[in-house]
Image (cartoon, rainbow, N blue to C red; front, side, top):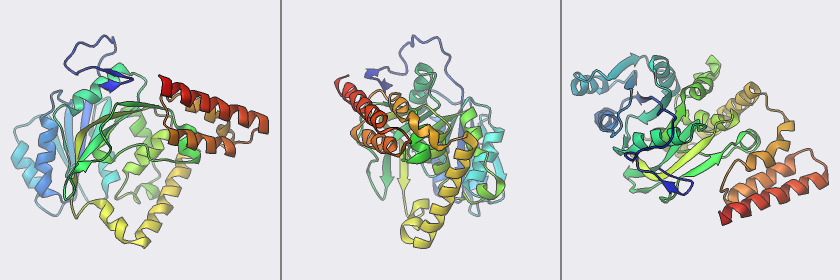
Length: 323
């Protein structure tokens, strides 16, 4: 991986004594029959095979199930589970309960992975045992052809408990580029039933922002090893057209954040930890400095202490520039 300025190819010997984690691939599927076989094939074609591939069909009305059965009937490592339509978060919960891996790698049924994706993810967890949440840059394809972010070095994002609780920022990508430790994902999926049913679409918000609140150590892989298909049936398309849907989405995000904060025991006193949290990020960017400058302005600190901490985070930012 290209982490902390050191690139280690997956096939090279690793000096770490930490064993690589087992990975379960969880594919959620709903009415994407033209794409589902390609998605699963991309998981099968990994240079480092996963422990298992769990496909959860969320009540598709097309021939998705028939295509999966026909294409992978002779593959013992693939498990197909069918359920009544209940939404993507429900499909994740079903697949998670059936999985065994130490890390869960999510894959939407209209996306695909480059063959070396899981090898890079596994190497990251092995080389950084404190990592809880590893996500990867994406290559958009279909109606749009471009990288989601400019390819670059991997980044250690450290911790973001205070940031996620009081000034939530999107520190992630779409579903197919997300991987999580099993314990973390279990906590994030443990939503009250009435709240869980609201996340029929876009439940990756729960994972990305909730992981910050629960203290996940995040690492970003800068090479675009995940293909995100752009087409007219993407879940985000409806939100771009409907103010009503956007407003309802905002309500459920607010409810989700309040739930996770309550579960984590977050209070306003945690704002005083902003300086310590910022220092967990080895090479913070200027925008991150701005976020934490704002958080310290919200903290109930004496004026002199607030400015001392602000000068301290500026010093850490400048140190990162020189590293």
